[in-house]
Length: 274
Image (cartoon, rainbow, N blue to C red; front, side):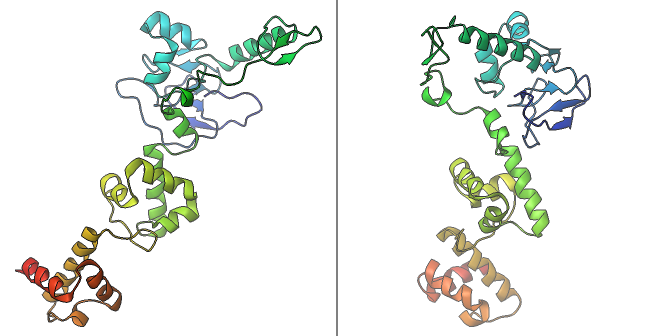
């Protein structure tokens, strides 16, 4: 997670940090807290002043976190990264140490002391890093870590926060069209692949009544339930069991769509009322 100097840093207040702030790059809070540990899932907390990293297990701060994790908590780096939702490419060491190692590696490559890759120095020796990395997560069939979701603001908590913020801004449950205008179509694709549908997501995660439209149509079961509820309320206000008296023009069309005929709708409606 810690960034190199050419990246603009963004910080948030973090009381556990020595300086009171940690760097989060361009990532979007809120983050999921670690259960039974410290910090956040998918976030390697880097103190804004010292550059030290927080251990998710004990909450202490170190420049070389990888050594501490192995010596104290008996965990390999890969195990630690997987447990706390970090990418395999996220180094458990401070920016200062990484820059020192990076400078050393570049120097060794230029001198031809690392004979890997396809580049050649003046002596004709190959150096650099090889392509087609077989250790990449997507080539091993592993799911991407929670850290990658935090990076693009699409972890479960961040999606909930976005929809709630938009609903308060609009004063209603956002439709898919509203979400696309505000956050883009990518967020809609993620919600459908992760939760099945926007309707299920609203009901199961947000506890909101979903807003239906041509872009987000009702299922047959939802349509029937909706029309029966409208009809029941209409009868309670004194309207006779007549199609034009019970429902609007738009809803009348849906009676034939979801029930097949008014007689079938009327039968179920009277059963519901009685």
